[in-house]
Image (tube, rainbow, N blue to C red; front, side, top):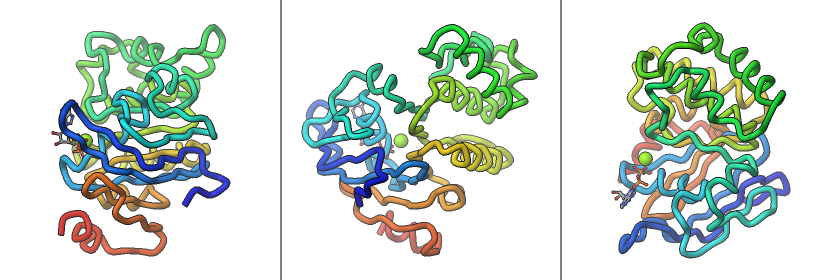
Amino acid sequence: MATPDAILVARGVEAGYAKKQILFGLDFSVSRSEVVALLGANGSGKSTALNTVSGFVRPQAGSIRFEGAEIAGKAPHRIFRLGVVQVSQARDLFSEMSVEENLRLGAWVRGGEVARLLDGVYQSFPRLAERRRQMVRLMSGGEQQMVAIGRALMADPRILLLDEPSGGLAPSFVAEIAAIIKALKARGIAMLIIEQNIKLALSVADRFLILRDGRVSQQHDVKAGMREEEIVRRIYL
Ligand SMILES: Nc1ncnc2c1ncn2[C@@H]1O[C@H](COP(=O)(O)OP(=O)(O)O)[C@@H](O)[C@H]1O
Ligand SMILES: [Mg+2]
């Protein structure tokens, strides 16, 4: 599956925590501008897989190549600077700080670049522009997710890793998250997305992977049109 267009390629990745191994030989790739959904049961290791790519979990074995360079085991800030940027499940915002302060923290670039990136985020999310001085704690879950995605965009990512972007959000926000992901895809940003909401995953992804027993047990093109019930069956049964 590693086409010449692949920007992220994982091979035989093994990782976990202390005495508990979670990933047992993870193989997958993401191509330029491609959106890949990582599906799997609760606790199957989806977040662990993302955290291993972004460097927060150290793999015990295997290879993860980004743009041809080995990143497995590198420090998170070095992987981040290469353009691999994660929006974690917990969003990790500074809730007592304003929208704009949170956004600025996402930028590691300096000077005029920050202003340009900030403009870009405000253009994509006019609602954040209106509320740039608002404390994040006072915003809805969906708006906070926008701040988290906006902060990731401040790093000018080559690939975004989104961990359950619709998690815990009101249904009215789910469509909005889908629209955001589609807009980012149209800008050519590759994405690896974890989603429990299979309908949302199918509406934005080109391809989906099913994580089972610490491995990618199956992968399918969304275009092949597999039904949601069938996907659920393959995740759980
Ligand atoms: N920091 C951690 N320390 C120890 N075990 C963890 C940690 N994070 C997750 N786990 C365990 O690893 C397994 C996979 O978790 P996770 O990757 O979060 O799954 P998913 O995102 O698919 O729900 C679970 O059994 C979970 O309890
Ligand atoms: Mg998770």
